[in-house]
Image 1 (cartoon, helix red, strand yellow):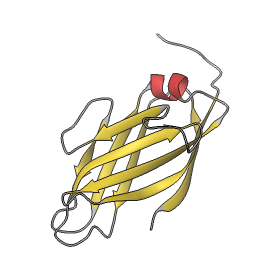
Image 2 (image 1 turned 60 degrees about the vertical axis):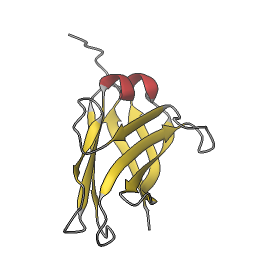
Image 3 (image 1 turned 90 degrees about the horizontal axis):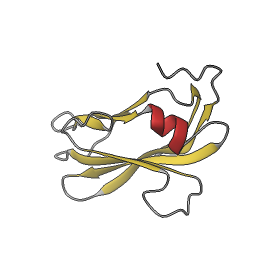
Image 4 (image 1 turned 30 degrees about the horizontal axis):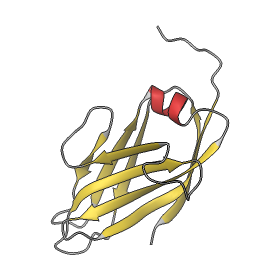
Length: 128
């Protein structure tokens, strides 16, 4: 069953790594793909405002399935949000809906977590 989370308190324009553990992976299964999707409205078509798609291959600025859960039924996914993602795509002072979905090697898809994500406006706009 997916959990509900609120990601808040981070400053728009800062990098943010979202790392989530995955428990109860079905026996004999492994994670082959994962999505982080953020939308203004839940009914917006994919990819919404921001979508990061990861596999077991590391992708700088996107993320990676750092542990596919094969063998021990426990895995981990990492999504990397850039300064542009948090400062422009999602921007400050408003909440967005998000979820993380997983795809297993047998094609099954499961939602790991869903909730709201928001960023506050920073004080300094230093780019150098």
